[in-house]
Length: 337
Image (cartoon, rainbow, N blue to C red):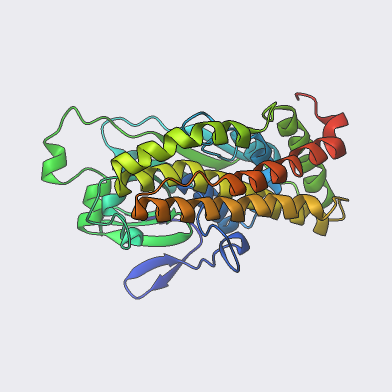
């Protein structure tokens, strides 16, 4: 059977007519953030909602000693701003059937799958590496073994063997009875989304709440203190480790603050008075984190230590030019709500 929302027929396929959101187009320092945030940007876009409004959570990112916080849209923000109720989906007996039930109800399903079977990852993991990632399913044809899904910045369709792999129907997977079901969520459009001035006001309220939960010191300073040891580990373990490190450190940090700069620009466009220096400082963090990434891989290739001291000077200063001014602007309202 075929189930899905807002779909168009194209030949023998059902396809969603989908244009990537502006956050995934144009000039970007970090073209991708992480699979969860990029997925939600496009899912909100498909719902006709503006993902900018819920980006205030980016002020909360911290350095966790070995990584920067894997930033995600908080579920309470999705509920308050967009009327979206996101709940855990219990998986029993059949992952395929549980997904089909929710799609039949008009919901979207977010589920962890193996990127080995995702054709949109041809440049990286498709048919190469087994890596966990989250997709947003909004269309399924159980008879034709076809699935429509959001992943990173794309909307794609998979079928055939890839369908069987995602749903663990391949013989090799079926022979593993101890293989645990993945974590899954489903999204219900429970209430009308806020719009206009009400959306901006609620967004500012959430920003204030997130500012109250911001790191109490400069996380760049703590990253800087740990970086020398991190460099030694990178030099010792080589390129495979570097790719893991930079995804969880430079990319998470830089992409987070690039989205913060986009959010502050969105507020400015809606006549919220924010000095241009604040989003500019956030964007500086995004670009300088990329410089650290380039310099670190160059140091790895040359087998030379580079502690990027001048980059850390820029990053520390830019952080101080971003968070404290935001607290000064919205701090009086920054109470835990």
